[in-house]
Image (cartoon, rainbow, N blue to C red; front, side, top):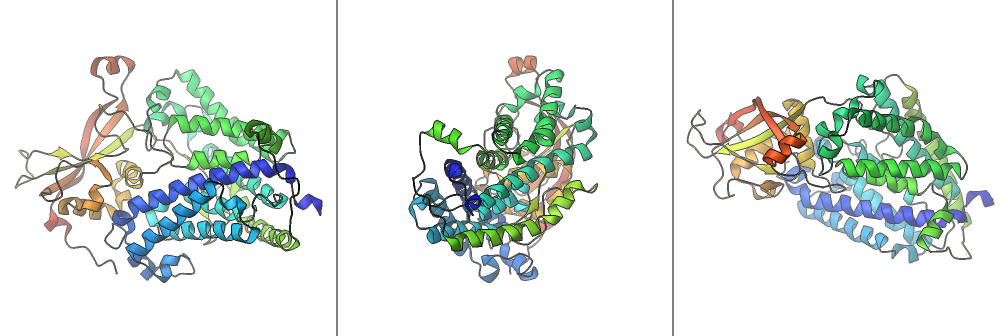
Length: 483
């Protein structure tokens, strides 16, 4: 039974769990700071209205049993405190059962948020955190030898994450096959960061090299994750380097950060021991009941892996899909298609009596998305600006605004303070909101080096049209009750 535990991975587990705790900390902080205008009782997509129409068994969540804004905030604070304790190493000192309780609470709390988060939580990094967080429950504290089966399940997760992303690209946009996608991607990605313009202005040959490196990592090197050491460490190191490259070149929430953290679990523990100058205890226990529980859980997860594995080889591969309501084993992928042109929406308001041609319109400024052409794109990730991210989709098609965009515009007309806090700057104070708001569509592109020297601007924008015609409170009408 010695093969069921791996004392040599003690330091790898330490690095993984500290990194995972950090991601949890950021995720709960994002939820706490943004939930009221997005999901609260008076938010754009209120949780009570959602749980009233969606069965608990299809979206299990503590908020399906009880909801209030205060209760949601309390759950976020609990997640913040528990993740901070794990990050500080306090949870490592607990007995095995207490360790499992802490990590199970973190998983259950965040799963509860994801399952009622609707459009705001409909991305792959949410289910990735749920799946990785569930596996962490069974890794054990400092005094327990890391379970071999869980370590291999982490490899299996990382493999699906990377290989699925590679396959969806080859099966999706032609530019991934002709190696031209990265000529556009740095400029058209959802939320560029300060370095994105520099990457966009690289010579086309280097963009080709970037694309080839992506394919090599996600389609070839990734198989090394399933190999013995030291091949697995080499493959994991390549993944860590490529994820670091993505972190430097764009804002993708905590997707790349968590992928990097998962890759650390594959690196040989002796490497981390030498780097961090820490050593495992001499006596590492693995209780029989814990070993048996891990074996049962691993068998169950392997059974659930059938549909995600089949999805990988399917010609109709799904991207970022879950096959069970607990998000235990999922399928992943990103940027199966790449936009060639960046369309950006700009929200404007006016306090003029009529929204005619002589009206004076003033822009709202978002925290992360492009707006003011002279403003440098900010570094946001691993923090996530959910409204900014969804506004990128509205630029592609206003229909993506669905049920929440009209509510957002109404909140601006009402001067709602919670909604305004999602923005970087409002041209209207809360007690003097605009009479009219509209949404204009622009084409954005990065300035060339010569244009940047001449104007100091980061972007050049060209008007395209009106995405949403001017509306007033009378036009958007009353909103239905949150309940």
